[in-house]
Length: 385
Image 1 (spheres, rainbow, N blue to C red):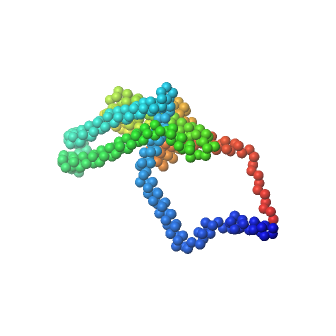
Image 2: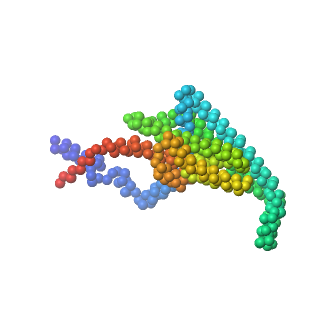
Image 3: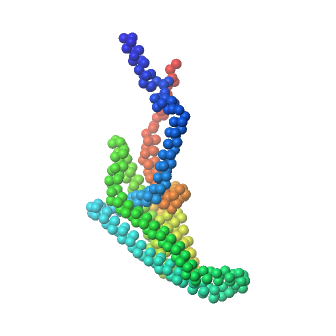
């Protein structure tokens, strides 16, 4: 009996569970010589650098995936609304067809106009310079600044009249065109991914739920639906604001005779997609572009957008966004500025629904967990002597 008890009392110390023992892994690490320890540390750093390099190289792809997932969440409420009357497959098909037709319509309406305007600019550049040199304004500048100004102007004219130099300008325009083509390719990839994500969104949610323990799945599924719904409502609200601005801009710019009203209306639409500063930036660009027509046209456009921004800020936006996502105004400003600083335009666009998602998680997870703590934790007993 005495030998059995001594055997039982000595077992825990052999297992390393006593308070004074060292875990086997730490004991093994302590026996490593400095060279091996440093080699393992260097390998860990190299693996971290390799992962960082892979993420950096895949940054564009990750942005495409993130934007597509963001847009699919925005289109999902529309699919759910149509699904009340039609099967989900038919609802997804209708939304897909509408999105493709809208994208194709924008491309067909804008790209030919841009190509035509660039071609006319290249062809008319020498004639524009000659007209400027024959004007009274040019004569006044020549009289004021002397021969140096005249020589500089003639140098510009000679440069533009040389076919080789025009070819160099064309080469730069080709590079710009390649950038535009790359942008269209990226938009096409995002569009395709959006359609795939939209069709399989429910399956993706079910798959995400499988990573959670079974007893927490109902709560996690409810929280996931709330977050995705907040993102979807925000996207719909922001696109609604952009559509209002784009349509009104097209009508107004056509009435005042602004140059390229369709292109300027597209700029207004894209600008309104960006929170806080988007509408202002688009309005400045449009007003400056109207200077090509006349200063009066630019002034009228500036006054219109000044009035519209006030109406949007105090009438249209509160009515739409109050139903879309409930985020306090201060958090909207902080999220948009912080998102813009971290991720540019895309970061500013995504920051507000992310803030709404965080608010939902705090309200439905953190606050209830804190409310259940009605008693202070018991104080630990002092160790026995």
